[in-house]
Image (cartoon, rainbow, N blue to C red):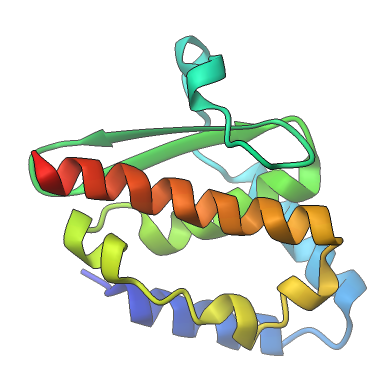
Length: 139
């Protein structure tokens, strides 16, 4: 199984293939289309990530060892962002997720190329994913 760091390295390599940010945004939108969608029953107020410009729902389950995430958003770019985070953290052990550095966000220049509210939303996505993992680790 790929580690979180290996997945981040793959993403960094993929983003290096693009010449400009328009192409990177398009790629993010494409990633959003492949997002494993959250079940309608989990599209609740409790699952909304606070501090995001658009609505993002995130649901986490634990099969005993690994954390699985599903999500959805009402904005195409945000959907791509959460898809990217899920690609890195999904199917990993809670401890690995809690300890993950998420260096790739800076390495691909994501925060600088998002509006301040989107960048803040991105950080809140990561925080919420880690919070779920922490809660599962404590069980």
